Length: 425
Image 1: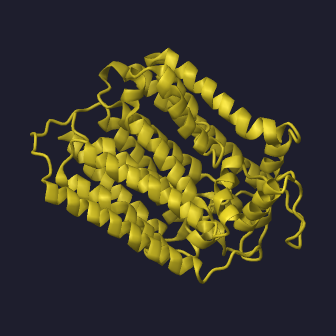
Image 2: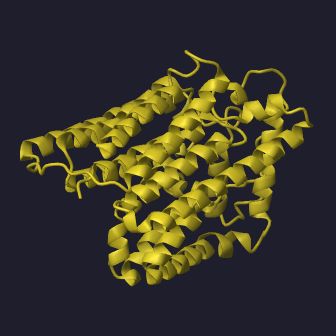
């Protein structure tokens, strides 16, 4: 009974978060309240998943879907991809890639052109009318190389990666023991969310590459869904695969960095050989993709990136008035900016410290809970995904500049958490 209740509350919280992040934001409460509620909804989803991972559900066995039901679900998935592509194309066709609108995609274009012409991608960019030091990690810009080589719009690469991850998730639910209602929910939800974001936000897909990041984290989440197969399979063959999906996230937007120690500790306790293989492969891939080709030439790339983000954030924080991204109903950055009576740089530093400490604290608490109750754990994938869900709620809730596009990844990630929730033992 508790399991079903927690699952229902997770779904309700997910829909609440989806609507608050899009068209319903700020209609019923002030921006501060909305930002706090979104954090609480994300944290609640993580807590519901963690609590459920120590419980079991005893549901009667149901027959497998008939062939026509499976085909109908496949048709829905294909229609969803087609409809999403239509909405995506509609947005990018009217929003050009222009550094005066957003420098994200223009920076990626410059870095890929430099790589193909044998230049150092991380040299200062001076063609935008201002000096910009590239800070993106390799898998933030290198996946767009095919678009540069074949001369098509780079934004389609982000869509393709998201579509691959979404179809991989849908395929996963079709091969799991899952109720028909759950299959319909999880099949339709990513397309509903995709269209809701396109309809309700301002050029989120056209000016950013966050769809690609969402795809990477969805693919990583799917590996956590089947973590038991990794723990029981030969480490030599499965370690590189798990490491590959970790690196996809680590070398693009490394938001989960402070959560990774929890994952490592659990894998280490369960299968030390796998933990060693994964660690070695992660280290090797990071060295191959980042250290040897780029970091050796300029060891300060990473630290310059952190300085760049802090400088850019301080510029946003220093803008007068109570309008703009800090007061758009996401996160608590606006509260720190307006309510602390210090110098602006000190207010920003206080938020950064709180984000770091709170993120570490959440990871430590989840690790302690797992260690104390590990012998009662019934659903390891749900625990791992729930702990990461809780971590994301805190990490993104305290982010220094809470742009709407940054929230795309966590909400798509939440959909994947539904898989172990509905999977039958």
